[in-house]
Image (cartoon, rainbow, N blue to C red):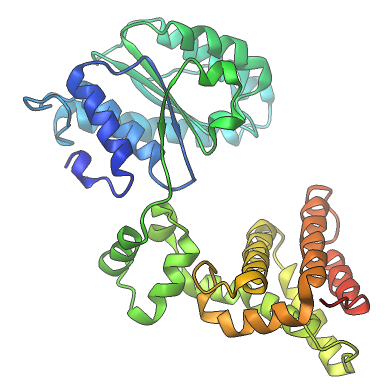
Length: 364
């Protein structure tokens, strides 16, 4: 085991290994790129490499088997367990009492934010000597969620981290962080993982057949994490009511719905809103279909659509709706997102969206 086991983003891996080989790993790093492409995984690999007992002659790898490499895994597991316990505590003050960080610590949002107490503990830990390791590594995942009141505390430790501490910020988009934070970090940029890598993973680890492969590769969109957890049957089932809705609203101008068709339509909107805990995923599926419709309308979309198995239907829907209809659909999905945040009945939102599109069937 070592960096060779990392999937995709070869340039990011090479950058990290070169820093290790030269003995010039900066005290503050920023790993930025799409979700699920391995940023946190590579950060933990770097933590192992900085402390591994058998790094090899080049000094740019780790064994994954020595006591220190195994201890990194133990630290992360203990920290994750502690975080889960704290999230269950309703008292805000008690939730942050007694924070203790290990020599390798994964720091994640405790609520919607990474709280000022978490960053204060990061700073205290950074300026103390490691307990067991030669190099302490503090990994801040979802760094864009650091509470604004904690930013100044973080800036001070990023500017001059002690020699025995490495801080790694992990976030999807570096531009979500303040320029003053970005300027203090050495940035390693990640991208979507190549389709060939995703395809190989789906075949070798997930046992996926050729008939499912094209759709699965597009759905995971370059994410190793999604490829490893994808339930393609669940995705197909989740998009089904959206297809029913599109069949209903993408009709020839002037052609209305009969009573039975209206019932089918409202059954679909009811299904879309059935599980409140799944609304975010439902809206994401709708947004993917919306993007596919735009691509199908503009250039046929065969090279870029996610739902590649629906391409003929996407083209037909796009032609029937026209760009104005697609725009109205986009507004409806956006309104549903807003209503979700305001705790409004989601089925009413979907019903209103469908009614609006059927009553205003503008076509190009």
